[in-house]
Length: 285
Length: 285
Image 1 (cartoon, rainbow over the protein chains, first blue to last red):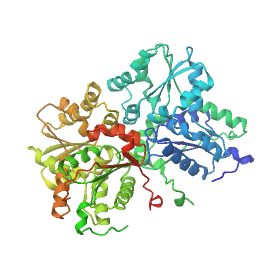
Image 2: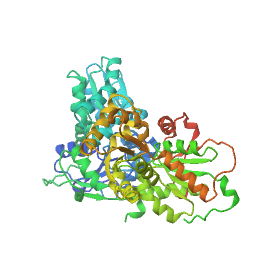
Image 3: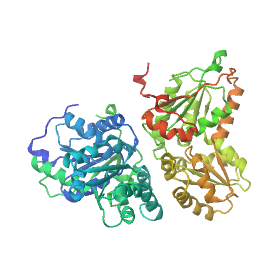
């Protein structure tokens, strides 16, 4: 499906599409809304097929193409892949397919990690799929060839974040188990990059475990900065001063999306504000 | 898709289809192979769309129909739904659609729970989807109208089992958090029914938490008994004395299926023994 480049005057008023495997990307949407309060966002969570983090690259790429095409059919001026696993495999294929700006979270996250690190020893905590794909390792060493990147899959963090057990003894015990050996094996690590959009809600448990000398960074704020820069370059920033609530769409269970997602967005919303959608092209007009 | 009833002599040699959302159902396959060592099994794990436990009933039913049709195309004499969430929504629709015996895990699990309980107070630990659907609550009170069923969703158990952290302090802390309040609120509970095929690998952590006076039951062994009885009734038991390894199929990541699944099957296998399959009918001959 070819989508023409957007260059008309009215394009500035078009929404920005944001997609994720589920609710984790709402941490990115939150940062985007803080940075770009006058933009209209359409957020799509592919909750029918979450999580992406334990799936193969081929499956994640196929799902990402379907999600992007679904959003493109709604006329968007830019696409944000607010999922690390999807960003790690789909940014380039989506840029080839769509003429609008496509921004993932890996590149901005890597920029934030490199900027924060003095020693160049950067630990990346992510899902199995993101670690296996090696996208952070490549992006960081491209930005900073002398960097040492140590990546660790922390699968249980996703379930922990979704269950809402983000603080306390259990969260800290799990964080200890994932990071202690990592930090012991490489004492020069001074930066912990959260390479999964679920993980920012666990930041205070991680802080309790790693102490104060290591910087924790995530890609949400830098992704918002990157989106703003890209839209400004292309003269696509919305010139209106209206503030609109985001349009929220999910492929399964609006009730669960609202219940679990409110924690990630940082504000409460209910299932009536979530549209249940089907990504199958045959069901779309 | 209509599948004709099987009643020819040669039908006894056909395989038994077993499906699950992923690897958890391998605990059921293990029990089936122990009970029915001369049967050929085809196990299908829908790893591209796992987990089912947090998805809506509509999505799980759709996925189950696709999985069942995929197995039916391979000519099977019986279908076992080795996933509690899928059993809770799909047993009846699949029985209407297919002429072969269809056996889920909810009914056998409920029979085991009722048989084990003296007081009639039965706690069911399951996924969000299974608890929300209420299938165990209905099945148990149908078998034993005076029973008191207390169901609790234990979402983190799935991730814990897949990560392989099945024993030790973290597993026990999580088990405490899920069951302590349950047991305190209802001291007459004498039976803990594991209503998710992932949970049997956590049995020893649960045992450490609940003490020795409560019976832990799961549906794997009783499901195997139910399958044997059904095949005997229909004269479909395999009369050969050959022992064949199961055919293992997954919709995503054979490598992960083998790595994580070996723990559930109770014996080691590798990715070369797992066939990657696509459930889309258009890709099947």
